[in-house]
Image (cartoon, rainbow, N blue to C red; front, side, top):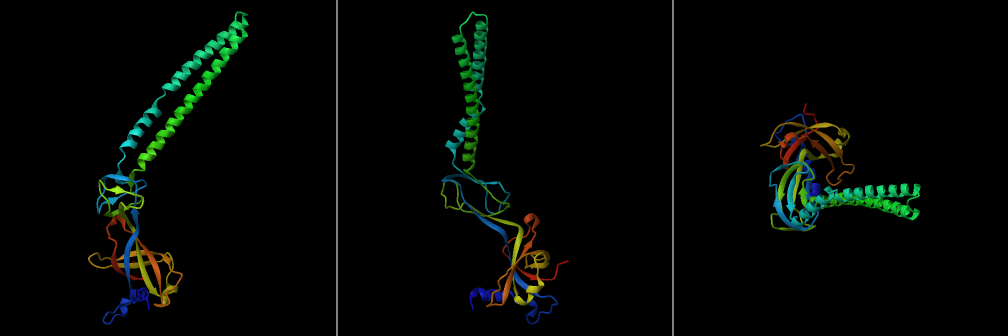
Length: 272
């Protein structure tokens, strides 16, 4: 029998079967675990400029964990913003269009009066068209400057390391002045609302449980208390060596009041 099978068998033994313990309910050992644990890395390589969060800190999705040094990128962004905000080239081109169109109109009027040549009129109309094309190009450059600003903002943002989830900071793995590369881990964050509870049950109970059932979870002291948890997953493959199967419960944890990593017992009887 493997160690995993032995552990599953031990977890599946009801506490009511222990000599000296009398109970109408059957209890099964379990462990309360985080809903999710993520290892946060950096999208870019560089030197860590600052770390904004510390161990045990509650974080929200999007909160800044650390920053990679980005002096050059921030200056490039400042220039890009100034270029995107400027409309001088467009105003100059608009003035040229107005002048060229006025000249073309005068040339056409002179031709109508037989006081000007057709060649002069055609040249003026061509210059007017060129001015309009220059205005269109100035507007395109303005759009491109805006896109370049957005690109630089994205480059600077990639050097900001943010939390991808709500949770608690378990470990900070790097500090200011250290070099972070693509394989480096910056921090470890655990989502603890809701919590997961994993339980191994005897196969004889397979027909008694269904996804969506509410069961009772009792964390060990010093946490204590009685809580209702919902069955969210049931193993479809039994462990033949220990004659058990696993189920997973989802335990609400509003306010992150209950810590993860707590031993517990589960009864298939609802807490209510």
